[in-house]
Length: 193
Image 1: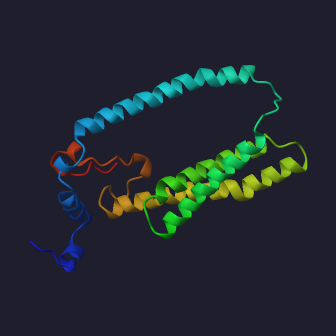
Image 2: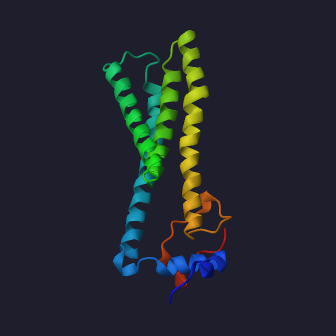
Image 3: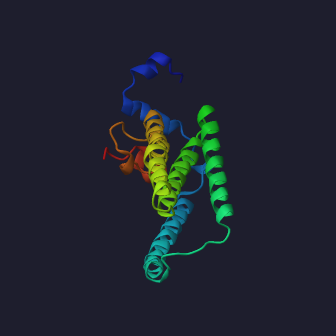
């Protein structure tokens, strides 16, 4: 059976989503559902263990760390961090320019690194002009750029998911499931949420 462009254009959004799911790779050529579920379960357990361990550790640090500390490798720490940030921003620019999906993780990571940079710049600044400069840099450059780098790929991810029929057009990103067709009887999408 051959579909013309006109026939595809005449389809409803639900019909196009169904067609996309029917044309997706057969489950036999993908990782098994059992393997996916086992990995998901263990990664979730690992993240919950990390959360449980981080709570008392954070309280311990809040109580025991000195208010003032002279750090070794101060220059290497900051220069190394900036090299990492520079690398992620360059990868984001290249992936964005070439329209590659690598832009999703690199842009998101760049945004998170910018938030960390703003936080540490402000928190380690001396009072006066040093702190003023850090605050101006954070609020005028780093945080707005971080917002763009995090929100942009999330919107693009949602657009790609809608465009390829993986989610309903009115579904919010935070409700977007990871589409594993075998989880849904008849390879249909879950109801609009």
